[in-house]
Image (cartoon, rainbow, N blue to C red; front, side, top):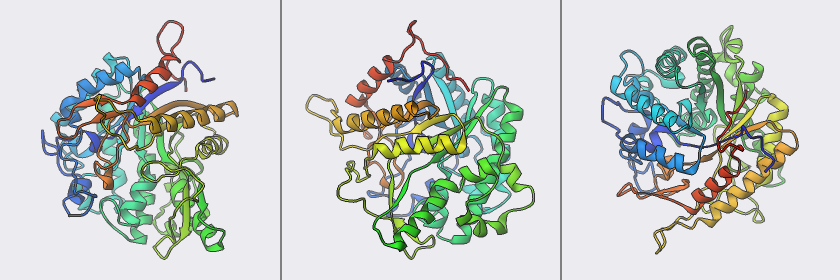
Length: 447
């Protein structure tokens, strides 16, 4: 691959999906802990009480990363682990866990990429209105300051939010995810308050972390109409506004996309847009597949529909269209003029432990080959892509799918917590090894 020597090869996870230890060492409930207590929230009523037990097994997981040759690892902080009430008194035991994790990563020469928020809002703050309460911008800034001052001597890469389009639309608009709200006003409040919190956090990180490299992580995917009907074409444009533009546009251009501007306007105070559009250093991209969209009577007038029969699909039915990945990278480069880090890309596969105690996940390898090739093509055409992080390191708790979907390149037996690198892990390690510099080390990515 014609990739610069300083390119980062990594893997991503999130706190709620892997840590477990849900009620240990002072951690309090998040909105997802509470959401999952109602029956039927996942396919088999799974919870993340134990997840991958990364809280106790992080050291071995870092060894796995080192064996794969990763030179970067993106993880998230559990807000209710370090601030059980979301504000006020910090929890030293929770803070100390991330000290241990960060130190282990640095000892293994793996660069830590810290994401402040990956969907696990403290339930104590949801009781005060959560993302619907404008005060949350201040609460998030205070939480950011705690994290920045504790870890900023060792961590320089910070993401404010992971996939804000998903946790707002699914959590406050459609009611599919925690906290399970389905209300148009709640959705638009949450969108604006998350954007405002992003801007406040950027200011804190600039102030408290010398040499901070800051971005946000956006799920950006082409939205195609399911049919040639005008109603489906209009629905695709509406979904694209919520999914692709509701956060990158105000953060980059200090304005909401036209499709959302009127709905969000009642919650915008003087000075908000300038606060939101603080300069950042890179664009974080999560991408899996395009969306095929049809008209609906729900509150956004659009829903996810089936892909055409000619489009290949993954084991969980997601379209496999590498060209859409290439086009997305080029579009981001042209629109936002920022270095791009792909911080999630991967696929769930029908992973089965074979008689040889191995997982031969040939479908995942084929997917990763096709998508990294599409990324290389985008680079050849001018996209400034500087890193690729596979989703995910481990088979983890996949939100509404529970443990029924396996995205990891490392197999996890959720009964015994045994880890088994899959064939895709070996493939990824070989590809990373091919990009070492001549002295056998890695260069750090430049900003």
